[in-house]
Length: 253
Image (cartoon, rainbow, N blue to C red; front, side, top):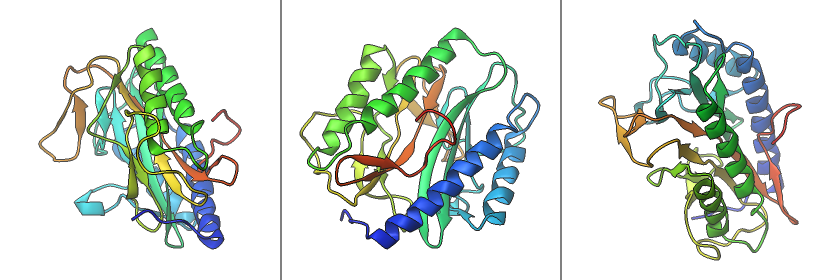
């Protein structure tokens, strides 16, 4: 069932989103060659909890860490560990923060040192695909309008669209109705209504769209070993359009 959030609930989700934004700003300054993904995870846990939040991923269905750290060909759900970031890597931090019972969810892909032109292209156009999806958020539009916008932009830029993973509603639970795929037809799916809160999250690849799950039952990689990027915002449907509840501090989108 799709829930419409009250003004009180929206304000609590704004609060979670503000902490989310501060967390990304803090972690971004720590990303460098030599740091381990495990160290990034600890920094995230300490920052979130010291600022009145809780990392919702920790313990979710047995997930063993506070955030997801997905490097290069890992699309999503990379488990933090001993891996040391290297010059030329890209890493996606996917974080869910809960404040006073309500969640915000966002992901961002970062370059470590000097990266290849193909990785720059992937990051730029995955981020723009997110923007294209968000632009479709307004009352009366459909989930399919978001999905179609993401897919068309990705296809126009020759990027693979992972179909097995999607965005979602969010609130007191990390994952709520409706699903928000990154492919689809305009005018289809649930209609957007004021007060809905959804997570839009293109997961695009430099090669084929196909993926596989590692033996840890969490880490999802591209089947062809080519890089993937992932950008996500928590978005409120407003009376006239949308509000990004997980804004980047002093940056675009």
